[in-house]
Length: 164
Image (cartoon, rainbow, N blue to C red; front, side, top):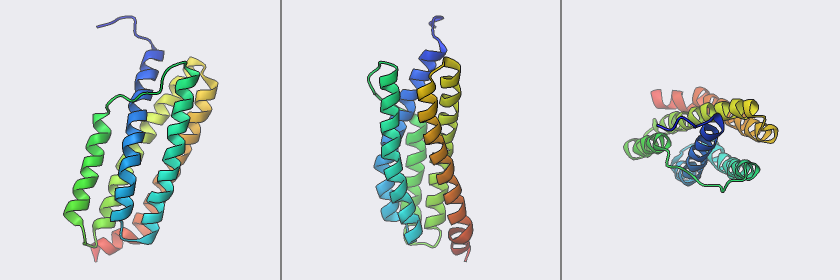
């Protein structure tokens, strides 16, 4: 075990993790939008895909600020969350419960991202990376808002439809 690893190394490592995750999410969102039954949920996934493109760009800016090449590191956690979402699409296709399942999958993704971005923002503050703090905070706010929107969609329509 290397004893010379620092918080900056951990920050960079986690940045690579979320960069990989965001790029996987970009691939998954169009599938989720196609599978969604309600037009509101479809629109929500499409809007979030556009936001995710901006989030990837912000991550690229942070790599640049650090003088490092933007590259991802395989994130098995996000791969597992996305795979669960694909299972829901397969198993609940054509049922009233599909949208509720899609929302639950999307929220699992959001909560993972919120945890990662919250941690990265705190570490960036500790490391004095002010520009990175601002970029990470923008993304964290978007992820939080998306989560709130998903909760609202679940509570106002999808869950009741699934229970009927």
